[in-house]
Length: 461
Image (cartoon, rainbow, N blue to C red):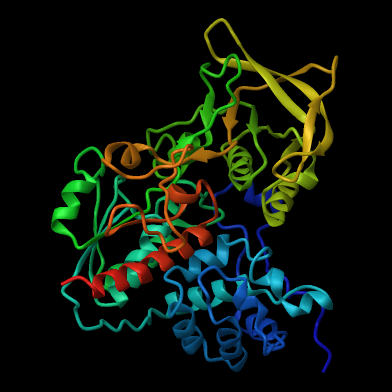
């Protein structure tokens, strides 16, 4: 039987309706569609998709179980390698990783691996049946700093190995960027909470409102725990460094999305944490975070939501799906455009951004064509709010407060490929070590570090 060349479509909210709510946009596969999509898999002997997965999921095997209708076994196979399948099935850039290696690309579209992972995780959550097998206790204690994707993955894997794990989280809720950085319409917070509950059932303890580097130091934790994993992420926002950036109405993407996500600004006045939006919002940058900001602004009532980016759409780092959704929802793309300064009113509020048109020259060190200003093309755009989404740097608190810890020039903690730092027993992974990257890469780093920590603990008396 011939293989269907295209993925089975996933139903979505209508763009005209979804810009007025924060409900999830893609609605997921039903049972029949999931089985049909799973049957597209060729079950290749060389398994290229597995090589493209940062956490090494046995992709052909879990898809084979879906095709048979055994979703429970598919879940067992998934959770053998990932502690956050419902998250990864929603936000993982699978088109560049597992699906990007799929043999079906030679015929048409790859198998919808991400959609199938989401289907299995959601199906099992609805049934409420996740088998937890607690191993024999090792007697070793590990401290994990940060309850983001790297920390949660490392903690879950260490618990599966029999170690006692305590996670120290600075916020009042777990999840890190999963909770405060990704909007509800892309990753519902109830999904994150369910994934965290699974990790806690493995035996992981999470302590909140603990700021390691302020209320307690790594050196103190080293006295109580046999090993430490640092996964505090990249929470230091980058700015444009142009005039007027201190005006009211100019936000970093971090502050904006945190207010909306964790402080429920979208439910003002029920929750008294408003975000000043106005009619016209400009987001600077073109990654996934920028798309999140621009799309969130529409849902908060903006009449015009701009993406201002100095290169063309071809160079945008955001996932294609996020760019397509932004277009569908009416985000206005001002491409080959660079901001020069923000202009304020007499009250100190931002009212305009002055920009200049750009042209593309030869590729720079990133491999993308270098943007070059075009003289005499300055113009202004009326705005009420500016959102700066041009990247983040590693959180400096632990690197600066931990004596003797080897840190790179940009503030990243220096590690080897398995997450070892220069201090014996101290490991790090995710954005704190690599700089801002994807959720799945942070998870992969947490998984590698857990394996290395387990090996280290086996040598410790």
